[in-house]
Length: 140
Image 1 (cartoon, rainbow, N blue to C red):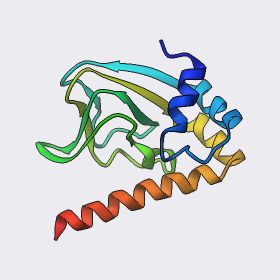
Image 2: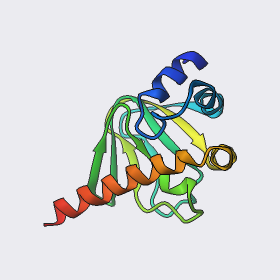
Image 3: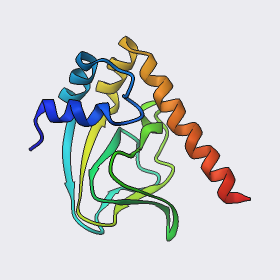
Image 4: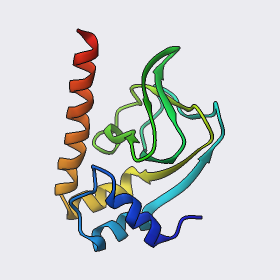
């Protein structure tokens, strides 16, 4: 079990939340649920309703469409962030490559915080822009 203080320190090291003051991070830490997934376990599947974003605390996950790998993510990386911005179905599946500890932040709770702190949206946009740029480089 991760304490709220440990979650705050961890969240401070994530690009999405780096610029936020401690009291805002404490608010996010309060709504962040710990999820333990076993090796090979599905976190979510493409097409499912998107209801949360996830941050990898420990372990590695694979983002994929069918058997085609799109990305591998490790500690301090997030996924599912598009689902906190819209209500569209998941655009890809995510499964664990090893036992993994994740923080899950539900869309509704997170939207309440975004309404109070819109600068968090800029962090999400930065992450999405970086991923788009990386995808463009790989496509060349």
